Amino acid sequence: MNAAIRPGRDTDAAGFIDLVRACWGEYPSIVFDLDGEVPELRALAAYYAARGGALWAADDAAGRLVGMIAVRPAEAGEPGGSWEICRLYTDRAHRGGGLGARLLATAEAHAAAAGASRLVLWSDTRFERAHRFYEKHSYLREGGLRPLNDLSNSLEYGYAKTWRGVAVLDAAAAASAAIRLGCLLEECVAGGAAVAFLPPLGRAAAQAFWRRAATAVAQGRRMLLAAWEQGLLAGTVSLDLDMAPDQAHRAELQSLLVDPGFRRRGLGRALLALAEQEAAAAGRSLLVLQARAGDASAALFRSAGWTEAGRIPGGTRAADGTPADTLVFYRTLRI
Image (cartoon, rainbow, N blue to C red; front, top):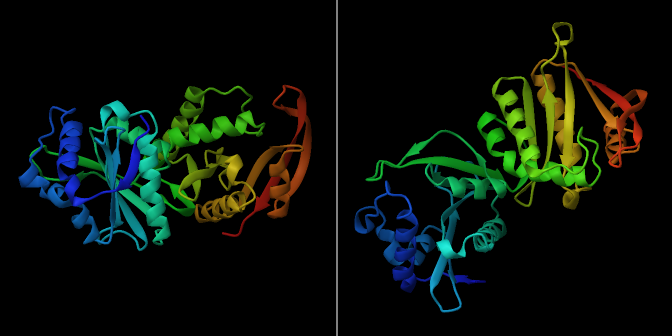
């Protein structure tokens, strides 16, 4: 069922209408009112072309339209360089086979080639499966709910991601990052990264770790930072702010992770720089961290200006379970 993706046409109107009607029909509370609320489906290619965007359709082997997606420059109110992903729908029989991911990659590549620095989308609060899909592809919750004031009484979540850069995540974004960060943590641990876990680390345990981190972010006890590269959430680092009263001037840097396929591109260094900036803004004048001796991250910390304070023999264990020394680093900040 490897459907072929091609540019969408106005003559695809019947197929688009049937696909959207079928997808909405999976939710009894959603009303499909073609001429009253979505008349643009009758000439969708022209609709997006007039807005500087593009439209694609996917056909199965029999020529039946089984998928669609569109992208366009975002409307007023979004930061410059933002493009919006729109109308991603796939036939139920073609889900789970990668068609949605291929459609999304097609639209994202078009936006990136047009100079997009940020991608946004909106998703009905009832579309829980779609939320997991978007979060898997590095989109994170942003802002509040958007009411559509339609016959279905629709409310939508906003999602966004940068194409390249680093950012601090709020509680909503941190919670929606658990799926992607769980994959990142699992992969880094499998590769021997010294981040408090030993392989094998299951996906459920990895996601649970990040859900706990999101709770700490909501409680003000932690900061969670993320880095994107080519639209992928490819790195993260945490700042533990939950210090004892006599140590309220410091924070602990934890869980610096970079996707193995995106290392040596400056993501780790950019995350460190932003962590130091945010810690200083939060009134913390001292940062501390621990690293496993021999781990590549230790060289990064030294080159980034951190001071090695000492070594704890056998303070941790390597991926194979053998004892390894722990290195203690610190960095003084100006506030």
